[in-house]
Amino acid sequence: MRWVPAEMSAAPPRLIYLHGFRSSPQSFKACLLAERLSALGLASRFVCPQLPASPAAAVALVLERIAPQPGDTLVGSSLGGYYATWLAERCGCRAVLLNPAVTPARDLAGWVGEQRMFHSDEPFVFERAFLDELAALEVPAPTLPQRYLLVAAKGDELLDWRDMVAKYPGVATILLEGSDHGLSDFAELIDRVLAFARLHRSPDSTSPGEQA
Image (cartoon, rainbow, N blue to C red; front, side, top):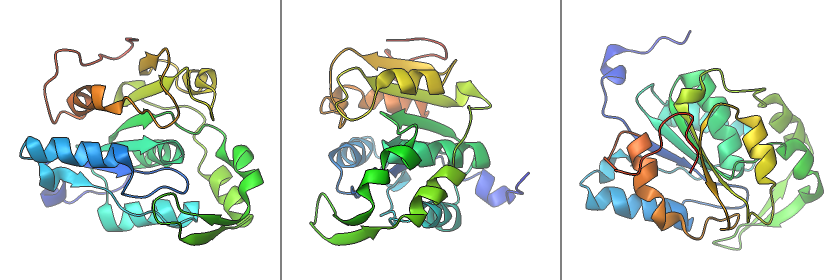
């Protein structure tokens, strides 16, 4: 068990957003969350790092620079959801998974080589060794399902929602009939995400085991 200093465990809870593959803190979901928390007077509670291409370096950055605490909530989109699962298991915090990647070591094999970022067109190299790093971060199943909220869209054009649901049995799930991989209707879900993170009350918040 990792020792947590008392002054850190008593810190106000934060929302830590982890973007997906080729994405950045300029993700529209990250921006919407930042704007909503700012409107609630909670701007200082939002953290959204730029993650490196290396999966091992990405989780190391979060562990070392952000150090998630049990009161924090990770919000991971796509590949960020895969990272969020591993980090939540290690750090004991909650996690919201937005169309999370389930088998990225397999799914990203075709992306080895030079890629470009979505929001800046900046080039980077996704190395073949990163596939092994992804495999090393696999979590077979969540140990405490009540710490997770899954948002899965049947309209996801990149990942299969059925794989997501199968990966997270017993987890509170918001299952969207349509939508898309990027969750273009995410604005309608923000307050439910913040309610799960205990940063805002929402009458429509999902309780463990519920599907919507």
